[in-house]
Amino acid sequence: MSIKFYGKSQETCQAIITQFKTGDLPETLKSIFVNRSDDIPSNKWSWNNQFIKAISGTSDARGFKQWGAAGRKVKKGAKAFHILGPCIAKRKETDEAGNQEEKNFLYGFKSIPVFRLEDTEIYDQKKWEKASSEDQKEKSRLRALPFYEVAEKWGLKVTSFNGKGGKYYGYYSHNGVIALGVENLSTWAHEMIHAADDRLKTIKKVPGQDMENEVVAELGGAVILKMLGYEHEADLGGAWSYIQGYTGKKKETAISVCMRLIDRICNCVNLILTDAEKIREAA
Image 1 (cartoon, helix red, strand yellow):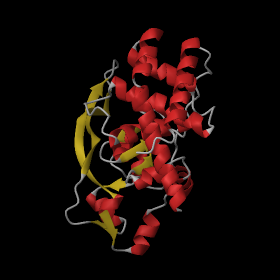
Image 2 (cartoon, rainbow, N blue to C red; image 1 turned 180 degrees about the horizontal axis):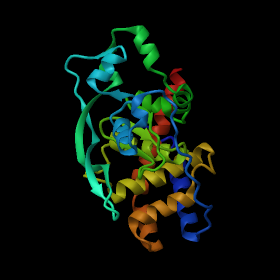
Image 3 (cartoon, rainbow, N blue to C red; image 1 turned 180 degrees about the vertical axis):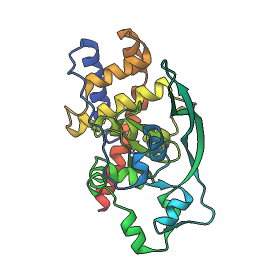
C-alpha cells in the first residue's frame, strides 16, 4: 500500500491530540438528523425498526403480502430479516366511580418477517409506480458525501434512516452496510474509518462496541476531515467528548490511548485517501 498520505495524516493526528491536551476545543456540533421523505410504509415504523432496516442495507422493506400489493414479488431463495411488532389486546377497566371502559394494552412484542426491496422484482410496473416514492434529495445527498466513491468501490451499501429519537447516529456493519441517522460529516467519516479498519483486518470483531475500535474511528474521522479542509465539520469538541466517553474521564488516559493507536488510525486514513486518488486517476 502506498504511504503517500501517511506523513500528512500522522502530522494532522498529532496536531489534534495536542489540541486535546490543551483543551482549546470548539463546542460540540449539534446533530442534524436525517428525515427521509420517502412515501413508503416502513418510514412509519418505530425508530428501532427503521434502524434494523437501515443496517440490513435497504431504504424500503415490507412483508410478503405488502410487496405483492405494491406490484413486486419476493425473489426465490430471498431471506427475510425480522422487525418487532407490538402485541395489543383489549381489557375492561373500572374507574373509581364504578364505570367500565375498554382500553388497549401492550402485552409484548412479536417477530415479523420482512424483505428488502433489493430482494424483490417488479411484476406490475403501474402498481409499483403508485406504491413507491424514493427521497431523491436524500439519495443525492448520500452520493455527494466525501469518499462515497471509495465506499462504492469497496462494495459498501450506504443508506440512511430517520435518526431523531434513537440512540445511534450511525452504524457500520461487517456485512458491508453504512447507515446514517444524521447529516453530520463527522459521523460519516467515523463509519468510513470503521470500514477501512475492517478492510485492513485491524478492527476488533467483538460483540458490541470496542473502546479501541471507537477511538480509531472517531479520531480517524477527525483527521481525514481536517486533511480535506473541513475544519468545522471535523467537530473536535465532539470527538474529544466521544473519546473520553470510551476511555474514562481522565485526560491523561484518553491522550495515552490516542497516542498508542496513531499508526492504526493513519493506516485507515491512508487507505481511504489512496483509494480515492486511484479512482480519480482512473476517471
